[in-house]
Length: 300
Image 1 (cartoon, rainbow, N blue to C red):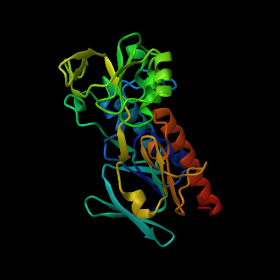
Image 2: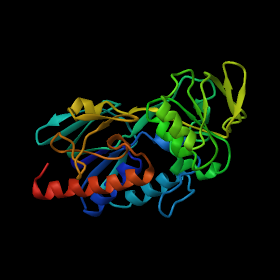
Image 3: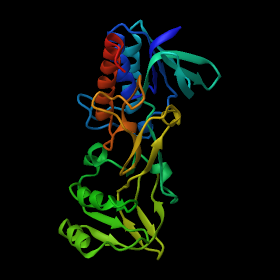
Image 4: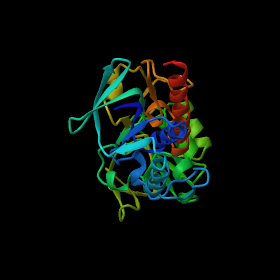
């Protein structure tokens, strides 16, 4: 069987794309590994009508609703490769099976690589965070930290002060220039130059950051920019164009979520600088509608 579309990734972007195509009565296969990027978070915030809901519960409910459309099917499998095949694409699964689709939607999301500091991983998504709009209000008025990872970490430190008194941990890195220090001072940011050796407290909660000189700086949440990379190499295999973003490389798409490869669309965190479930879902809606119209009008 050749599907009208194969969607690689069954999280917020992928399910939203599948919903549009299912409602257009197009045959769709959604490939899902069950490892959404935000699976580490207990609650998702800022999503219209779903503020405070558990991400995995949101996805389970959405999948059930999408699966109600008879033309949509699911495979709990990983796509390991994709290639052009006639007028469509062949997608190889981890068990060796191959599927065929006229269009592809890449919605496999990102994976985050965190700094190699003891205590970091077990707190990710709980008290070690990247988005204050998703997880800022919950720490309102409490001591907060920002770890210097990339040049844009300065911007993050300035922003986080909206939620609480902020310490900017340089982690042994270079001191910001005079103009940057003045901006940070104007926002009330405390600079801490010492290297961070561990995160302490009863995980997943955070009590503070232990420094190389033995001091413990009290913080309730630590914000940082993770090294984010696509969860799958398939976009590179297909020849999609990438561009650099503050948190890593992203797939370049146009306003209709088309990549530079005919018949291949992409949606969600892998295509944008700002990452949250709302943006991902909106991208998926656009990608699904665009795929449908490309099938109707023959555009790729």
